[in-house]
Length: 231
Image (cartoon, rainbow, N blue to C red; front, side, top):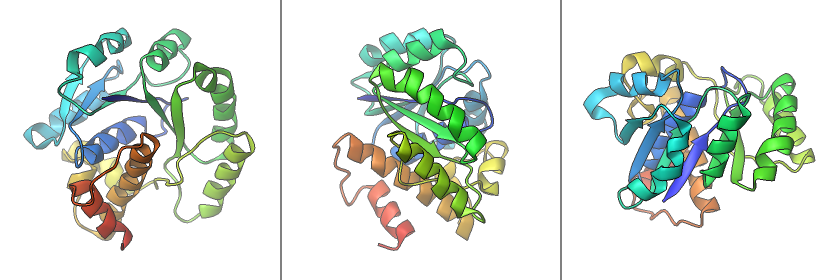
């Protein structure tokens, strides 16, 4: 079992959307649990809105310290646990607890230089020294300005900071999904909604590759990823 924590340097970068979307995508190939330890409870509200059609298991915890016991309590029941963490990296104690009890960390960020530069500082001072495996995810990318995404990749590469090759755009489908009671695998089958799922599938496949876990070609994740990329 792998515990994957989604952490954010600041609000508004799509942390909960990333956590919920990765949980939905991972559930296409693995037994998946999402744990909401964010006091704001955005993931909890979203999951309740989806209701019985939620494709993964869900739990809410008040204390990030519960992650220390999580591995023992659910190891036999799940392959992947996605954790939606408190809303920023400013709480050092909370962040240290999350990092100490995670196998892998996903850090979404917007690609703007004013977002990436402070993220680099946080990565070099806190996340990387922790020794936990991680990748930065460029999120809420403006599809009309791919150059900004490429510049952000270059800034991260120059500092030796690992990032996903895939990125996720800022799409209206993500904005409306919580109120509509949908996760990314349930979006309407229009062009942009299908692409939204494909982008998160690309991220999930990179995660599985980092873990040296083979995703069988006949699993729903692999089949859907192949259709989404034209393979």
